[in-house]
Length: 391
Ligand SMILES: Cc1ncc(COP(=O)(O)O)c(C=O)c1O
Image (cartoon, rainbow, N blue to C red; front, side):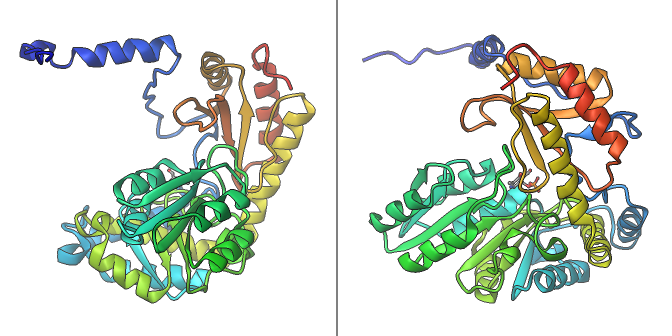
């Protein structure tokens, strides 16, 4: 039998250095860059799709809520963390989406963890598109369910996994808009497959809410599924609403079940009142100006078409997210840095954030981009493209 080495304390974390060297060799080192409060650069990397994160009405509501309720929520929702603001936001989110009820979590990540784990378990099978967001994957890992992650955007693979499952209950989990390439899941078809197999459907509408559907009601609403008894939606409040936090939206009995059983709800400090007020005000701004979502999708389409016309491998966006393939992880990093040097901030996705291993620039459109912004961004991205980036 091999003896377990007894390492002195100063060597216990030596393996971290070995791992760091491997990441450096593969071009996968990540660096934190503090952004200034007022940046001159054009932001095509964030998720502030409607430009509401700095809206004076939204920020003012957050400041007023902090003055009234305090800087933090003080406890979990079930102890001291719930305020009338949380209840109002839940009511408004449910009404806006045409669902029975909603539950606010401290983040979209926590909402996904809570929804997946509470709606499955050892007696369940979970079938997912293999490109779902990391927070859903973590939920699957914690669920104790039989999990099958099937080919991307292939409803027949979902159907096959459901029909060959060995567990009585089943949950199908998908993003509405996939976060890497910005493509849309076939929600209508998936809902039909679920119905044929007695399965529930859980849709993460993080990138669809505020961007797609009538007045930004999201991809689930656009597919006519938001009032369905077998469909549950999760959203983040940190993208279109420019705030922070997440929510699960769906049938009343699902929401009641989450309050009693979702561990990322029960054992987590509630979302801060300032963030709740910001999200509530942003939702009111969106309701008052239903043209905002269309501006986002128009701008995204325009950017993608111009990049494609310039010969780059840009995805055709279904919502706000556009990806542009890079020849390698290193080239993607250098490309993104060159764009930043010329005043355009773009995202850079590398493994493990890209499910197919292809590194990309990731661009996000916003409602408040001008034609001149779009032209400048396209010019810089094209001019800085590395060798091998063209289609
Ligand atoms: C598809 C998707 N789901 C969930 C999340 C997590 O949301 P949050 O940032 O609010 O935790 C994100 C983004 O960050 C996302 O892109």
